[in-house]
Amino acid sequence: MDPGRVVFHSGLARLAAPASGGPQMLLFGGSGGASSGGFFRGVPGMDDERVINNKRPFFTTHEELLEEEYYDDQAQEKKRRLTADQVQMLERSFEEENKLEPERKTELARRLGMAPRQVAVWFQNRRARWKNKQLEQDFDRLKAAYDALAADHHVVLSDNDRLRAQVISLTDKLEGKETTPSAIAAPAQEVDQTDKHTAGLMATRQHKGDITGNGTIDGGSPVVIDAAEGTNHSSESAYFAGDYDNGGFTGQYGGGALSSSEEDGGAVSDEGCSFHLPDVMLAAGLVHHDPEEAHLSWNSWFWNE
DNA sequence: TTGTGTTTTATTGCCTCC
DNA sequence: GGAGGCAATAAAACACAA
Image (cartoon, rainbow, N blue to C red; front, side):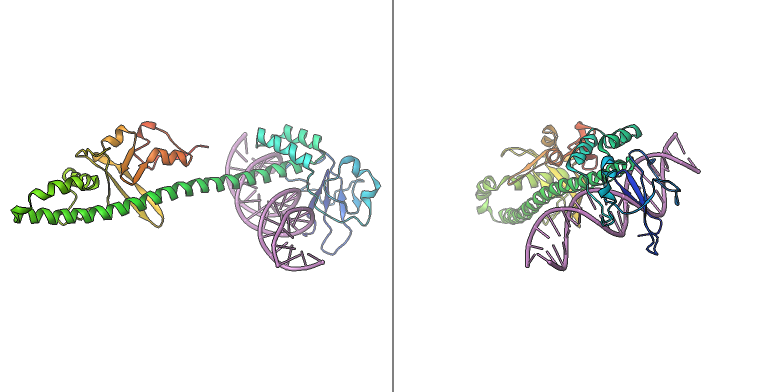
């Protein structure tokens, strides 16, 4: 303990013993007896008849302080916890307002038999605990949202791989059809059987012209998501262009190819994969300043405090 | 009982605001 | 410059497994 360090007890403060181990000086602060902030700073050697040469427990009441037993030489210097009642009242007060104006601090201290400084310290520590809890909750919500997105992403990537393979397969068959007249009748049936991803992908190819002749997609790795509902595919498809790296995602989906998605307020669906940006973000507890734009951008969502 | 991790109470130093 | 808030930290109290 540092020489001259001030230690608080309930309703009193004690000047710690010097390093030499000399007698410890007790200062009776009393309820409201000390100003808040910089408590007892600047009062070393305070000459007060209330200063006694002894040790006592923390958090004794004013009445207890008057009892002889608390002046027992055997009493250890201890940091006592607040009683359940004191904590309960402090918690109630904190719920009402987590900042402590001087009048309320004084009144609470008086009612609880504590030093105003103790009340202030308790609120300070309580705010710190509250802040930590908020951070943990924010982390949990973000992680849940990320996990959901990552799961969707995985499904989309799998679909994408499957669709590429189908495009290559169909391309090969179409090329074979051109050179083999006998094969013309077969593709009609096959196209019908081909799942809608292929049609959507090809529609995207038509619309955006971003698929090269060998079936690969130019411009990074846009994930093609069919925006049309049902089996009747429109010629427009939503695309999902983003960067997933190091566990993070940045980017937007939508763009000029988004049609039914916008009508649905951001719904982008695909077989075996559903994705709805506002739903995911709202589920994570975020809000958007502009509901009209909420489904278009990832960047404008924020936590609702 | 004891070692260890967690929680609570309190201090210190720095910063901002008035 | 004083008051009060916050982050970092110390240390006592507490919980709990071995």
